[in-house]
Image (spheres, rainbow, N blue to C red):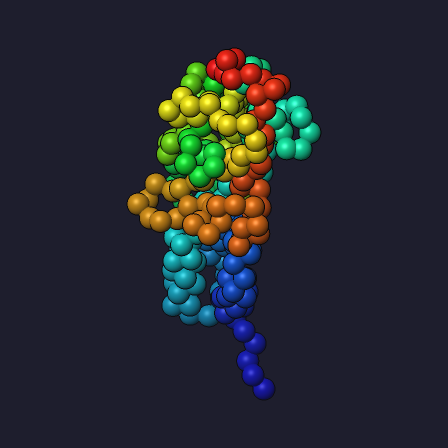
Length: 241
């Protein structure tokens, strides 16, 4: 009769099953955070070597995971797609979560090559998730004009005792009036706005990845890009900015 699997062996088997399906990257990151913290205190019936192996296995996987950018939306008038308001502005919102580095580099890009310029807003973590128990703003200022070309953003920390959270998180709400780097006005018609987040450990990790720069991303996160419309009839070009 085969012997029962030890807790360490069961843990490795479950992690391996999850890791096979890359569509569970977000779930995997949360599982890693929870498991890494518990491996130091869990009571194992197997030798210490199994504990060390499992711990290092988790660390190697953790280092290969990218930050997660999600929930990109653009609010304003015009139904679907939203019409960019060059007078009153639109609100661009998205969430970033990260399991390794507090600082990340963020790009907000129109049509693949035009970095946007926002005019104020906020980056913060909610009181429910904050390490301090109260709403915590990012140390990164976004007052005035901010060009989103590899913009370094400091993510606030989350509650260390909540294993459903990753260590760093931020909700961004930014005001945009259609300005892009270089000052040229966008042509009338539909355009695509995408957010990309990279870690700061000199690794190639980014979210979304090279094959995930448009809706229908390979990993199932389809909310890293959004379509909007520029209409000179509603908001003439001579009122831009």
